[in-house]
Length: 372
Image (cartoon, rainbow, N blue to C red; front, top):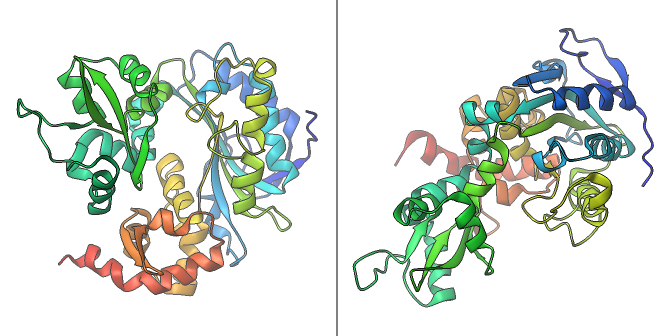
């Protein structure tokens, strides 16, 4: 598993402002980042400053950008942090993606700012609000799968379907107890960001929505947790976002396919990681260009209109800042006869196709901007 290190262009060096391009060796970057991650005093450290670096760049329709981050499981105290960093940084270098910024965040920072809760927006909304947040599509799919309505009550008048956080409060369950119970049986996707599992409580079976989410949030927000997060863009000869996501990073389930998630899964001992599965798969990579813009705003506070896709939307689809904002809030829209959230429609699509999509659905956004 040797990794070839190269040089990378960045737009500002080690927290210093300025727009002049500079080259940083990956070996130097791994050394600096690993020291930041291991510091007990870490709260937030901007190793390569997340300035509004895209402001002076005029993107082409062939350009793409993403948020890539190392998850807490590969940066924990018992992990081989350097090996994980080399694997991730190496994948970026070998596929000609350029780094625009690098930051290290602690669990305290992620908790205090609500960044991770926002990152898992729809998933967390369903887990928190329960059936009131489930779409009509999701309720119909639930009925087809289980033969009962999501609104059904049991003989005592209690609901049979709970959002994860309501269920924990109702039955006095800890996050670890719910996580353990939830993964004993398979869950089912009924709509975008909406999964249903069943658990047994007091001798009866109840349905729980996104029962994995409380544990998902907790895994990022403990005091010793760390993530290292990068704003990256495809270089002139860079691997397309779709191939980066599917083949270079690999499937959500690291046991399948190939990519660095599968390398982590196959060589757990080398990386000092005990568990590698769908939740703890080591790395995140934006699923699409519009989702990347939302993530850049959430993690780095890059204005939506300054993201590459934001600039392209203004230039090639005549979008206003409000329309760009609405698009990144992931509303349900109809495209090619399918009604789905924007992120689902645009997942893995190249920028040029995203612009075509945006032109087509632009009129639908007025409902959200003006109201019925």
